[in-house]
Structures are given as C-alpha cells and as structure tokens.
Image (cartoon, rainbow, N blue to C red):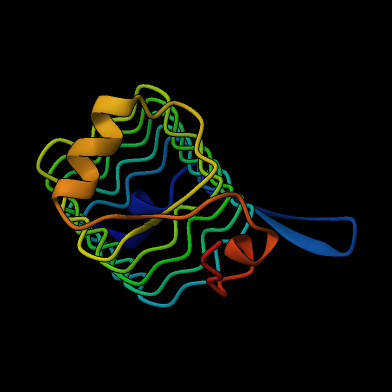
Length: 154
C-alpha cells in the first residue's frame, strides 16, 4: 500500500499551542506505532488491526468504534481514552493502563489482559469485570495516580 494512500484523510492541526492529531477513519492496518505519542488523538473509526502500538501514549484519545483486532497495545497508556464500541478482539492489552477509559460496548472477547490495569471504567458490568479478572486483569479503586501511570492500591 502506498504511503499517501495510507495517510489519506489524516490531518495534523495546531490547536491551543498543541498538536491535535486527526486520524479518524484512517487505514493504519499493520502500522508500526510503537511508543507513539498519540495523546488526545482522534482515532475514531480507524482501522488499526494488526498494528503495533506497544508502549504508545493514548491517554485521552478517541478510539470510539475503532477496529483493533489482533493489535499489540501491550504496555500502552489508554487512561481516560474513549473506547466506546471499539473492537478489541484478540488484542494484546498486557500491562496496559485503561484507568478511566470508557469501555461501553467494547468487544474484549479473546483479548489478552495479563496485568492490564482497570479502574473507574464506564461500561464494564460485574460479569465482564469478573471475566477480565479471571484472565489476569487488575482492578483498582478510583485514584488520580492511576491516570498518571503511577499505581496506588487503595
């Protein structure tokens, strides 16, 4: 796939002395975004299947209705991210921070959640929480330090 075709519709625009990354509807299938700083980025409806986002900073990012099947999000920071309706089936979320993330209607079937940190999440039922715990997820009570990436058990 040509780079220009891959980046079609992507715009980077400065707002309030920061860079707001608009990748909504982008085709980033198989992209290598290890360690990328995508804090606050709009990745809604983006195709990130098979993408490598290991260690990426996605705090506050909008990933609503994004497709992340088989993506590597291990060690990523997704605190306060919008994952509403996101397809995370077979995604590696090992050691990721999902504190404060909106997980309403997110598909986590078959996702790897070993030592994945959850807390203060919207959209997680007791049954889903129990299932995630059974697969190795860690749940913390609401704590401001969770969003900073520093974990404090209460």
